[in-house]
Length: 252
Image (cartoon, rainbow, N blue to C red; front, side):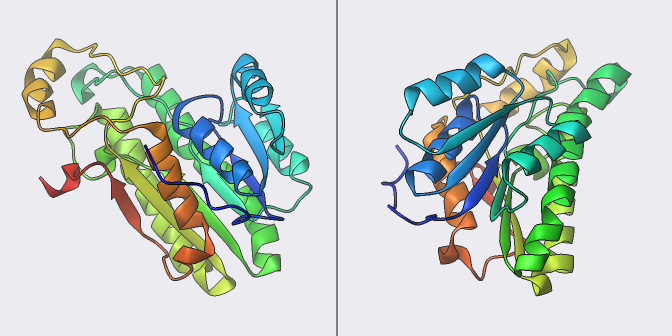
């Protein structure tokens, strides 16, 4: 599914995409590159990045493997981009096994926040100076339906995605006058490699019946279409928006 590519829409632009080895990140990297961008594709798994390059040898994709939550990875991505970044798509994320607060361990809490929130902060901080100097730039974060409700995940994922929304809006308000737009998509269920097991019996008992209301599982390409639209000039007057891309789940 998704929409047809728009040739040349991002000609001459440099785009960073995290989580590009699979799922929404991979689909987003392919779409940006297919529409003319030079894509700096990041993932923690080198073999997934190698597969992306092998599958699409004609696209302008540069790969950088690394843990996106680390400052060193942010610096490596910026260096690979040559200091200029027109678009940043923060896609990388992990789930929390639906663990509720009474059962959460520190390691899970800290890792979920590191990947889902700290990486977004560090990469956004890294690209902002060049965007401000250029007087233009687009940042698109991948939030979640869990940022709009408390029944879509465990406590760490829910809290981290609520924080992503706040970060997105803060960037939009503070740097909109500098020509930088920041928006987020809030997906519902998507067909990806992200693991989402129930490791809490109570969470499964409590949330299981509520999950029955989830609309159909989306394909990664449908999210990529929304991300690239928000990054494009077609959305030039869209800033600070959290866009549900969830088949109508947010309306239930």
